[in-house]
Image (cartoon, rainbow, N blue to C red; front, side, top):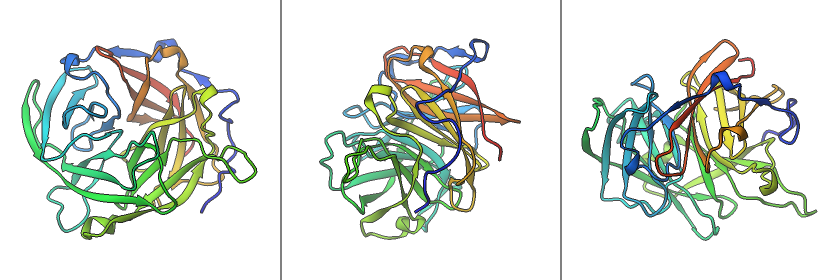
Length: 306
């Protein structure tokens, strides 16, 4: 397992605040149907489009919006339930059952009580056609996942360039000495999609984010850039941006990360993040939050060197 001794701004230290002139609000059309946006994933095939869904207990519906807030369609995912959908990602479709180049992955991975022996990751082919107000249906395939070291509450997921599924834990854990452990990263191999067995999520890394409730540093979402080289990981208070090794899909050790403070954005409960674009040393991000009628928030944050 790689260590988390990366140099850079510490989670409890200084951070770059989002500049007021970089913030743009995009009121969401059909927002009455989206009341608990719990994750965000930027499209690979449709520039400027993101996918999201409602939190646990809601209907299994995938929504698409562009960065102006305009609805680009919604799809009922047949024959599954929304037990606790918390994480979304777009990435390669791997395995013999794949019918498209890119898929939208839906992580039914929430477990606030740490009671689920296994969780489920669904995926559907990324829609080919998008249209304002369109309604369709989708059929998902899935894998059942069990962590190698017991239950975890996860709200962040992304797909590495090789098709691995990367899961980032949210809950606070302590070491034998009582210290709070840094945020843990787990990997599900792409070969899981070709097996009927329960897939194992293996601990592969950690992040220099200590999940303290007092500082709102629990991880609620993550997004990998389309080129696979920049990772955004958000908490309720800040966005951490890491340089990524495209071979492993994991943050590069020894490379300084950047921190972007979003506490002044007045999000009721910041949940989703997507990397819309990167230009030079800045990235344009789209943020979603729980709350009925909440707009998308588009911000610009500094990024580490690639």
